Amino acid sequence: MLTELKPVFNRQKSFYGKAKIIIKKDKLELYSYDTLVAEIERDGNKCKVFLDGDGGLYSPTTLRHIKDFMFQNGIMFGTKFDIIRRYGVKRG
Image (cartoon, rainbow, N blue to C red; front, side):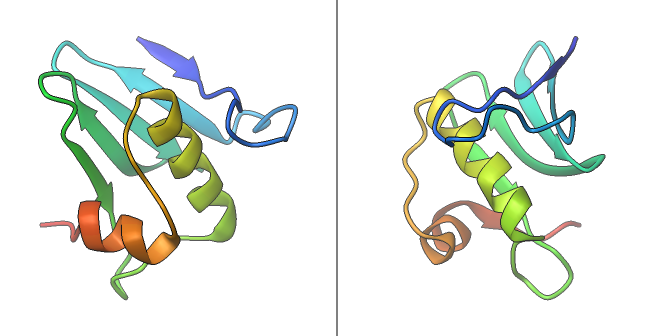
C-alpha cells in the first residue's frame, strides 16, 4: 500500500507529494523524490537509512522527510551525523 508522508514533527503544512511510504507486510519503506532512503522493519522497529554514494544523506529536504518518518514511528534520532552513525547503511 502506498501513502503520502504527512508532516508531524516538521512545521510544514505538507511535503507536497515528495515523500511517500510503501507499507509492506514486514516493513515500511520511505521514498523521498522517488528514491528509497529509509526503512523500518515492523518486527522490533529496526531502522535503516540508506546513504548516498559519498556516505551522507541526500539533501536537507530528504533529511526532514527521514526525521519525520522516524519520529512518527517512535525511532530515536538526533543530528544528521547521529542518524548516519546509528542507522546509516550503504547500498549493496
